[in-house]
Amino acid sequence: MKENLFGQLWNFKMPENLKPEVHSFFDENTNAACYIVKDPSTSACAVIDSILDFDLASGRTSTSHADMLIEVITSNQWTLEWVIETHVHADHLSAAPYLARELGGKIAIGANIESVQKVFGKIFNAGTEFQMDGSQFDRLFEDGDEFEIGNLNVRVIHTPGHTPACVTYIFSDAAFIGDTLFMPDFGTARADFPGGSAKDLYDSIQKILSLPSDTRLFLCHDYKAPGRDEFCWETTVAKQKELNIHVGGGKSESEFVEFRTTRDAQLSMPKLIIPSIQVNMRAGQLPPAEDDGQHYLKVPINRL
Image (cartoon, rainbow, N blue to C red):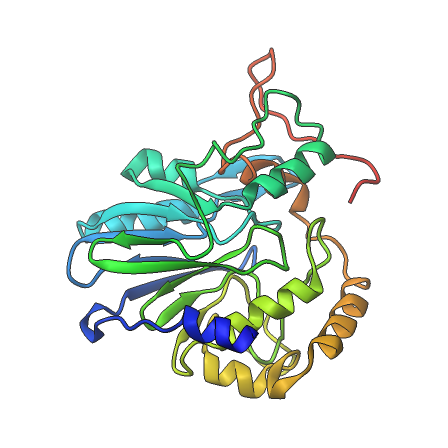
């Protein structure tokens, strides 16, 4: 039944001349990749999974990484139409509102952000003023939604597991898959955050692997697997199906769930999870300033 569903889901073709231009930017401080995706037929572009620099020890933010994107976009006279997130990141802060303020563009994420906001709104005791309906974002994408960047058609699919709100964006021969698969030699994303599910992650990965074998897959992270000296963040469906150490070679759902659950129990929390979630669940905005005009981040004790 799943194979039939996935077959129907991917039964669409894009014109060959509308393959997106993908410009990648990797941040070694957070091991995160972000992307500018441009329509080759117009000046329109989108930024996927932007990064706001944050120093945990001092509590200071900076916009160096985002400014690099702005320089590329403005120097090429491109038009930023969308600033989109694959999910609420737990390992870096989003620069979405800064980019939208400087260049324009709508901020968007998957519609299941509401479930993430409800879980973490309680964990961080965000208060009644914190809206848990996704209204901080300009658009919430449902599974199967489509939208345009210039003349590029983009399809959105729900790919939960790492978080309940994860989505994948498909542009012709390129898919931006968030935290689902890593490079084949590193495996897959964790699934133990509140609301995560190893079973859901396996199902989401199967959706991605049902794409045409030559589909380019652009990842959120890389950590350099043992024996590899360079960071990598682009692979293909074919390589993942053949070589991924966690799901390649036709590994079953039960094998994956057992492995992922055991592995996740041994992992520590990401070092930036506390600030990242509080900011990213607000579409990249800091928590409201308190009566002294200062923004504060909370540290919930014994909750994560």
